[in-house]
Image (cartoon, rainbow, N blue to C red; front, side):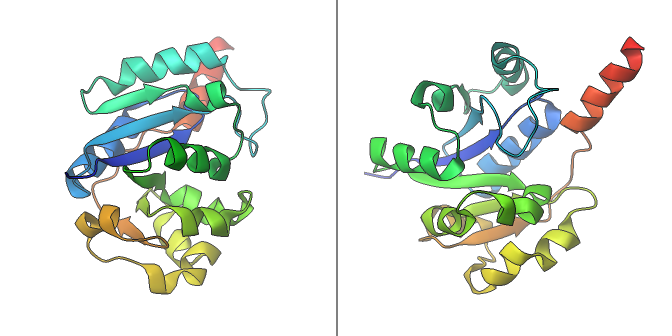
Amino acid sequence: MARLKIGLLGGSFNPAHAGHRHISLLALKQLQLDKVWWLVSPQNPLKPDSNMSPFEERLAGAWTIARHPHIRVSDIERRLGTRYTLDTLAVLRRRWPDYRFVWLMGADNLVQLPRWRRWREIVQAVPIAIFNREGAGHRALAGAAATVFARSREQRPVNLPLTQAPAWCFLFSRQHSASSTAIRESRETSRK
């Protein structure tokens, strides 16, 4: 029996936007995934909670944007009480040992990955697909995480879900310009 291949897109989704959907659809196609799960985080430890919209609002917004039978929006981190990516991955891998998980992230997150709690263990735990983001691609590929794990780079995205971690690939596909930060800033400007 074939093992399900699941992409995991974690984040604040503050707010969710078409760029999240865009990379999810790319992941489904280029990595030949069965599903993508959006893991809406109750609170990102690296972000201040001062400008964070309420969790229920972010979760509902993610459902509105996802709109695809192979994209599932999840509040599992809130239900589990996990705060860090490595802890969430450990639970998911225990609950679904037959699934092949792939962590999905933008190039901007690869740049800051060394700030994540126990980041090297995350890379050792699950293959990672990195999607190019405007202005971040070259910095990401020259950054600490890409350098430390340079020998673990997979050149063919379709192989990534079946490759044992550590493994990562960089996808140079069409970019989407949407940004949660820009959306929040635009909202603030329009309120003034």
